[in-house]
Length: 424
Image 1 (cartoon, one colour):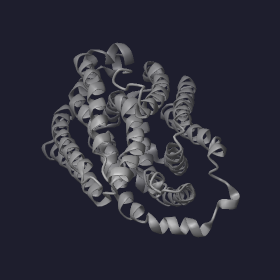
Image 2 (cartoon, one colour; image 1 turned 120 degrees about the vertical axis):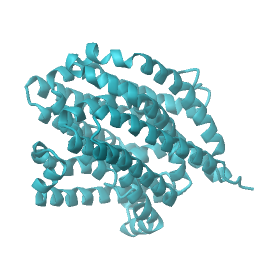
Image 3 (tube, one colour; image 1 turned 90 degrees about the vertical axis):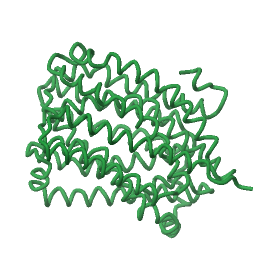
């Protein structure tokens, strides 16, 4: 890894800082996963996955997508007010979500295909609020290149969540333990960054202006107008599978899929997210200088390929045989699902990391088309499974074929965008 990301460049040092933090953060849940799979049933993981999907879909728009604009202003004062605007919108989103789940609790649970989720929907507003706060502060700290703080926040999140899930699992709490632990982790991550804002003077009282917040809301109104809907669609494309699996198959199958997803998404979590954050920051600088992001795109793509190919190849060879001994005999079926899904996760690891290109270049309408295409691919695969009454394994083969094709097309498109026209 150190050879791929040579520490001679600032890009590499920043990526390695985030990757190191992410590695420690992910090592904690990975270490206790074999314990959790013996404390909780697949059905418990299925209910938790359903909760996380509902929260994730709503949380992506918690800050109105104004957080994605925090890196764009040229002055610190403007960026500060965009950040404060994002925090305010997050609070409003939490309140609106509370009204929604209070008024439509039972119908929502029935729509999701599992009445057992009903009492836990009341925690969704808190999850949305905490996500919005964390997203805004994440971009603010990224702008200030406070990568150690970002890395530490991930450790606090996974450490708190894992400890909560482990202790509640020992107490025999069922799906409640997974859900409550996860929300606890969200709170720890948000609190970690909030406690460090003094160094960046985010809440410098004499410089806070409601009028300036309104100005920035108008300046970046395209983010809630276009990026918000696009991000909601994108989040739906990631989480729709969990909801439809719950409806079309069973909570147990969803539990298997959720564990597979957690394992296969680790390269994206450990490397992809860190690379995307630094790519966003340095790509934005290249855009200001040259009007395009071609050089940053090519170097990032090369690093992703060099890191991803050996990781996913090794996983493909051995993952089918690892699930039962690692996670318990009850989870053996999930190993076969993991091997089927691996090619898609590799392609998405590369393509999704570089999708930040559209945000850097403010191609928000095009991003919306990309996200809608992913939704269409999901619906096509699930529609075929429903129409022909396929079992879950047959459905997965079609799902992988459709989504892998789409993400490959997207990657080609991102490269064409990145090349652009060089500024004179």
